[in-house]
Length: 248
Length: 211
Image (tube, rainbow over all chains, first blue to last red; front, side, top):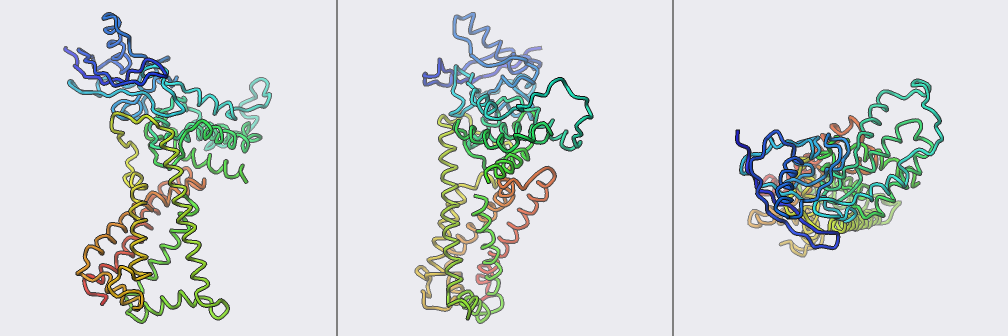
């Protein structure tokens, strides 16, 4: 069985201060069973053998839970396959002869480190601003000692599945980090342990988000559509409600 | 965006209902226009309430535009390097992507509309005519391009509200969980009612129901 022949247009940038450019590569004999990252591995092996610089891209777990492998594929964060990280996107979704454009997340608060790798430390600073619970909790309590409503537990867990990949920012026409920030605010704000700091958390995290230079939310819904974990848009409504209450 | 938008939506609803008075003839329409000026009389002097409403609307429009411009500027600053590939919308919200240019079209329309119907500057009958005569003359079939502009602008208003209405609830933190279906359906319904209501009068003049 012969594989696919693809044309890749990849963003190459030597370092943060380099201007960067799109470079075209041909990749031959790509198996449909490969993941997108494995296809890039094939390209990189060839580049290394030829003495060229391999394309830098972030990756870690390659099983869709670490949030490292962000890249914009043909104008869509993580590619067009819904609820999928780039590492879980398989080449069977592409056709022989396809031209694929690959770019890093584009946002001022996510500076490009090299090629497709961006620095997402802005997300860490948003979490540091309030995305935690500062109660000395001791050892794990008995499961039923503090009752939590089923709906709240479900919604909190849905929000907690955020892997911080940054696709929401990359896809947002405004470059807003609202979905990421709202996911953490929702996750903690729905659980009893998160109540004491609920107001200060919402205020601090939203203010840090704005300080980092992310854009404002205009409710386009692009974030939730590309989110590999399907974080729902109502987390943003909850963030807005908490923020407005805290700002009173 | 949300609060000023809400003020403007309330105005649109009132304006649309008032417009429909045109179907009850010249007297009903002109009387309605006069009533807007004598609201609250004799307790409130002539044209005071109307002026208050006008000032509130101008403030709402200016703040709404200011919010839009600052959001657009923040968005531009947040993404200094654009994507090479054309961004494909994944959220299938056509209306959402008309908000900015649609807003500009609506602003141009409002300027024309005030010059046409309020100040009479671009109206064939001018400022001294009755409101009803200005209305009928303004949408005369010979001025089909004016009517066409109204139609385009009203469709833009409809699209603007299709996104803007539910979006306001989201911004104010009033949306959640299962309410999205109802909010979006409600937004679509209100938008449709407003578009149909507003277009009824120009179309009525064009086909001769209002003359």
